[in-house]
Length: 337
Figure 1 (cartoon, rainbow, N blue to C red):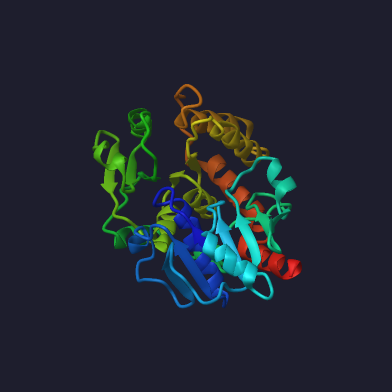
Figure 2: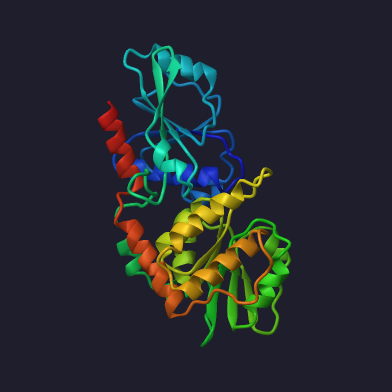
């Protein structure tokens, strides 16, 4: 598997989860990264058995049976030459970015001849049965169901006060942060702030307590989401994990200069809110678009009440009815072989 790091939390986060899940199912994984620095905290304890992390220009005697090119990162030319020289060409998979847009179903699984006897298949994660699904480790939902959020918080030295909601914040730099903080403070809130620029911009105020978190490993970050009542997430990896947490959440999509993030956000909202209570749907759409700079800032904050909780749980159950990404990927490789 090859992955170029665009930011230290996004692409490498997805690649590392995929590598972990593949290795846990008995596969040997080599992961080439051009910047592995984030693994120092993301993979606390080091690489598990079955995973070898390599520098981008590292040479190996053989290329393996399957090559995963994460997010169109372009494989090193010498490695492609090795692939072409192999007696039986490896299965070449381009793992694409996650999107709810309609083209994903049309494009999932398509092949692209690459010359020299090589063929690349495009594998699209997604939210419908006609896509490649989402990363979901075996037993994940059972682990969440048996999780004690308050006990985990206490273990981190964090104590929820009576009547206080817990909100996690993992965000790109955002000029709307002061408005968000003021809105959160309207209800007694403990705000758990992940590392980043937000930690230096938020201070305690009436109605709002803050706690600056350290960098968390992927399993511990997941538990942060499970322990919170409302999660603000960003990018792709934490976006998916918030959905498995089955808690109300707000997504900050990765901004693109050409504005393509707007339609991508709306495409997900259309799917996510299709069966939601109309008032909840209107408030959710307004908040998400405003937090992403696509609409005026709204007054109401999507709450953690029964309607929001019920919708998050129903959406999680809908996703869980689909086959997870790694199972689909392995099945696709075997079928195309």
